[in-house]
Structure formats: structure tokens, C-alpha cells
Length: 420
Image: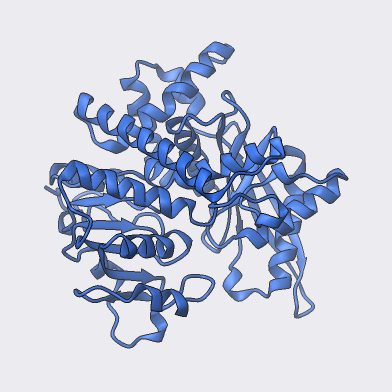
């Protein structure tokens, strides 16, 4: 059980990630030198982006691009536009991307990018200028064989289209493989928009099998109603589960009889906001502690901490967001018998289908949605089984097992290259 609040919990996503990386590498038999190399990105670029705003003033935005490690292949990872972006967050996200790619056996290292801005308070034109300015600033270090960006928090296929266009202008040739998550007409892949949620749904199904939970009628709580959360709620509803609560940044909706997901999807805005339309709401914290079978944090970091982990009433937690559960909370959930499927496995459907898109761009041959979904299913199930059986064999939680699986191949590549 929880030890209480006698000592401050580490909520820095980078240092908390490094703790798990160190433990995973130690269990794999690697020493301090391997940890020193893999604990931070090989490269972090900070950029400044001047933008002429609609009011006539010039505003300068700060952005980052982190490339964790390219021993296995080019780096890969999304770009987020959010007011709370920090350098440490981007570094941690790039490490998580390396681990995700390792678990799925993709030929990538991890990358990540972000710009400190709030698209909710910007015009369409201002968002476009930030997107194009960011690409100009990082253009020398990215490319289809160097570092391949993708959508992330508050960026979408339209933002990717602007970025691809800007990069193509700079390079003076069309470069669809430079970025993934593009619109279909510009070389995007079938199934990319729903890929993260579909991967989460597969993990939920496989975890439910392990715990003997029948999905039909199972009570599901989803924190977050953006791209991943909204599609996931739809998939769960369509599979016969009861989605009893969803939330956005402003609050949560709860109905023990199950919410009308299709109606909520019709009413949400482009940033996933829907609760402002309702009077009777609960807080995000109350949502996390609702009695349910399956809890899916699909919002932001550090939502389940040592302060509330003992009150999590779900049998299964599947992380659709990046870093929603702290290491201390992970330990508490494990001690309490909760099966936690970590983010580096749970939300890896996005990077898997991004990989499919990159392959299709490079081949100039495009797959059907059915083919994409079949290949995603195969990779997700294989990844889940590998991590689950590693956890069972080692008698460790699935997060540590996932880090071990994800880092093993990268560490081998680092050694073979003679870096360590």
C-alpha cells in the first residue's frame, strides 16, 4: 500500500524515466557506461521561431527537437504544440519513442519535438506560420533517413501537410517520407488517424483476456477525449463495453449506465473539448477514482501519483497518454494487483502505423485500410505477449518489462557499433 506523503514524489518526467531506464539496463546486464549513453538524447536542438501575429505584433516561439539515439536507424517521433512543453519533457518523450520502437521491432530510434504555444488561442494562419517556421529551423537535422516527425498533442494531419510542404520547398523536391501522419492525398496512410486508439483497444482486449474480463458489458473510464481518447471510446462502445465516463481539460462526464458516445463525438470540438456543454460534471481526479473494470488515462503526464494510486479502483489500467502514471504509483498499483499496461506498449499503435506510412512513401505503393489494420494487429499482439511474458518470467511489472524489451535491441546495436 501507499507510504503516504512523507517524501516529495519525483514528477519530473525525464528523471523518473531515467530511473526506470537504469533499472532495466541493470537487469539486462549492462553497466554504467551504457546507462550514461542512453539516459539522455544524443542531440537536442533549441530553436526560436518569429511569427507575425494577426494583431500586427511579432511573437517569438521556442521549440525543441530531441534525437535520442540512432544506433538502430533514423529517429522517429511526434511534434506537439502545447503551452506546457519543456526541454525535459521532449527529452523524456524521445527516450519513450526509442523504447516503443524497440518493443515493436521497428528500425528506428526515438525522436520528439515540441513548440511552446497554445493553438487554442491562435488563428489558423498563426498555427501555419509556427509550423512552417519550426520546420525551417530544424530542416538541417531531419529527413526520411535522418529523423521523421509525426503528429502529437494539438497537431494533426493539416499541420503535417504544412510541414511537408515547407520541407519540400527547402529541399526543392517533394518529400512525403520526411513526415508521417499526413492527409491521404499527400501520401498519408489509411488507418493513421485511428492507429493509436486501435492499438490501445488491442491492448485492452489482450489484458482483459489475461484477467478473465469479458469486454461486453465491462465498465470503461477514459480520461481525455482528444484523438486517442475519442476514437478509443468509440471502439470500446462498439465492442459492447460500457463507457461510463470520459473527460477533457475542463472536467468529466459520468453515467453508470453508459454515455452516448456517438452524440459526444458529434459535439466535441477539434481539441477534444465537450464537457463545457454540460452542467453536471465531475473533476478529472474524481473520474480516475471511479469504480470500473478498465481505466484508460489518455490525457497528460502525472495523473496517477502516489497520492491517489491507492484509490484507483480499476482492475486494468492501459496508458494511452505518455507518462500518466509515476514510478511510485506504478509500484503501488502493482502491489494492489492492478494490471498496468504501460504507455510505451499501450499507445505504440501510432508509431507502428507511422512506420507503415514511411514504408509506403519509400516504396510508392499504398496499402488498403484492411491491410494496415491486419499488420497493426499482428505487431501489437506480438508486442503485448512479449512484454507480458517477460514480466511474468521476471516477476516484475509490465513497465519495467517493456523497458527491458525496448532497450535490449538498442543496447546491442550500440555495442556492435563500438560506441560503448
